[in-house]
Image 1 (cartoon, rainbow, N blue to C red):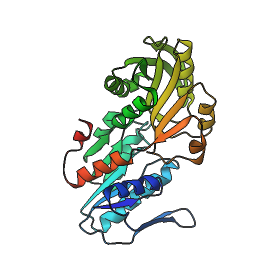
Image 2: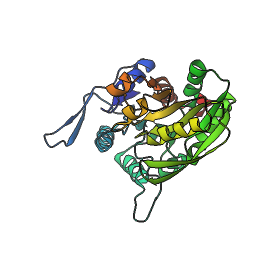
Image 3: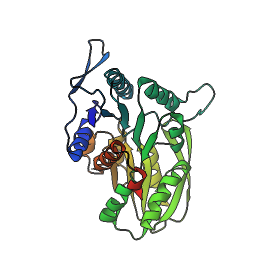
Length: 310
């Protein structure tokens, strides 16, 4: 196999390559003067099983184009199979029409990846499971839960815990972790007036005297999470922590979370952490590179990926 890294999260790509005992393929992704993307593969990939590692994180559109053009370059270089490894699938939140005359951008990106020449997709904690159905090629959607649960036990123990979903849509993810920890489950009932702005209406479940852990797939502005933490404490929770898979953390999100009542927030390195994240006293980063590397190895060997979670 060969691993090709985009520019979005090279440290993760290097960690995956190290775990697999290989080096990253020699490739360059650069810009013309007008910021047009140019990709060049500097070694033979004819007949190879190639994995392109690229999160579609900020700047999302640039990284999507890098991924598409890299896939096209590999296809034209006669790679045998091309797997797009997308730890963070950035357009996943646009998985349905939310109003009249609005797009389903997740489906559009799925079409683009397929038409560019992807034979397979490997990703982590899609925002909505049904996005797998947007593709006409195989999709392996990994889950961070098996890595999150041991970290919760190590950091907070496994007693007096309540796992909290910040909205109804995240209940399945929260329930998976609650079952592994044999913990109670609570749900934040919220109303979202527009993208990035939400209001907590009610807490479903008893959190009085409990250590609450908010579990979600994405934290962007951090407003929803901070509001949920305040509501949980007002409902009698003795403390609030958070475990989030994809730390988008745009704008002043890190400052907002540092100033909030959240005791600690743990994110994964599916998106490369910024210096502000690494300097934060509230935020922690755990790696999912070994999980992604194991999945790459299994795909290359044509063995079971789902057994990673058995």
